[in-house]
Length: 460
Image (cartoon, rainbow, N blue to C red; front, top):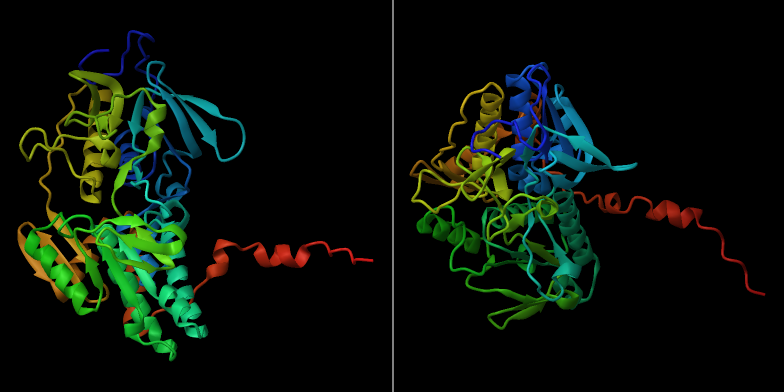
């Protein structure tokens, strides 16, 4: 194993240069999709074959999850179909269960059927991240995540279902529990999910004469003393002020201690029942990395060079690349020892640099370091409300909300999705928001199973 970016390995001999190199992309999130798309455009079929493995048939554009959950856009428009976008790639619907890089092979378990082994010349390790949970009593049984399109749809249906429960009951305790919504985590995911869902629920109350806005209780629990750590403190303070003006209960420097049986217990001593506990308190690298032989750091991220090559100490792991949430990529715009934050902004740009570097190596050139100064952040706080800090310029209210939408519309892959999202937004200006819950989506066979059950034999 040498220090160059080449793919020749002493353990397997020299690859014939006239054969196309096989590039295996593990994961089709922001990194995987953008890298595969760029590779398929930069390299001809004679130079490389790109194989993408992911259990889902789509990439989820996560910044649009709050808007999809709130009904501002169709959930289908927050995802990008892999086979439509990656027409020059081979898409395998399955899960990578093992990577043995010494043998340059990966074991893939398809959705159905026996596992298969895929050999490769280069591998892009990009399984992304999963929710970072803590051993809090009751969280496993009662918590709701907010990282996938399925979770976003479920949360929307659940919140609207709680409004129906509250409107139909005569028990004050049942109503209070149904209308108490708790969000744990004050990062971008938590703030946007909280703000968008409150905005949607408040809008829906026009159809519930039995309920008043003050009947609802929206609680944000954040373990640190600030929200939105990606922006300056004054912008975080502005966000808290805006949420409090909407009568939200903001608990900073507070931890969730327990939620057994839906009874929320906080570190400040408060305790109350709630049917809705949304967990958005950070992410961690995908556990899929445990089934690889790649070096990891103390946070279980794959260690990388600025070139996006996986590195073991000072030695480059030839033919292995990584980026995004699961990778520890040095941030060359900061002091040594700093790494790029797990954001879509870095992931998309890292994917482009990595694809270019893989093409460089295949063509016998040197890879180039990834270097990008974080441009800033934008966040939606509901319809026509937002906060933004971009290249040092700070905006709030409607201008920030407009910048948030404009930026993410420009970032979502494919012209098809851009048009559909813009159409959704345009219709929302003239049509009222859809506030119907489709809870049967989560258990579609329940009614049929009950109707088709064999009759119980009559007792003699």
